[in-house]
Length: 114
Image (cartoon, rainbow, N blue to C red; front, side):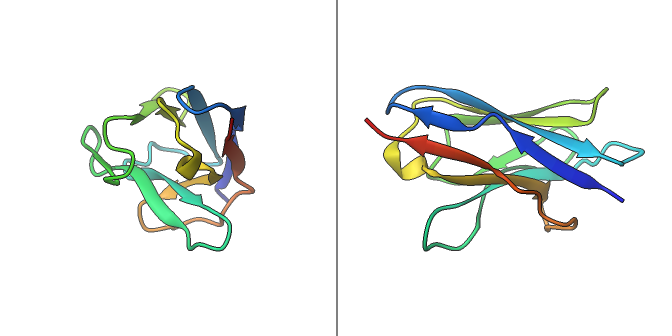
């Protein structure tokens, strides 16, 4: 059974950076279409960044140019590099496939505040 474990969140000031990590435990092969989502208080979960194929990526307009999704193919880890963070990026961040195949992990809280 695949288990998703996110980490790397924290409290940062606007303009700072964070790198989130996602361990895809229990998978015996690379999952090409992994993605990052986020859910802010009172809002629905939204897709932030995803692999659309083994090498192509897609981003929500709100994070384009600031966030980068990448992977460690050997360890089946997925990362989200977040630069120039804004208060509106505050949310719990989750990883999953682009279609939400697996049970959701606990997520990692990102808070951007001065």
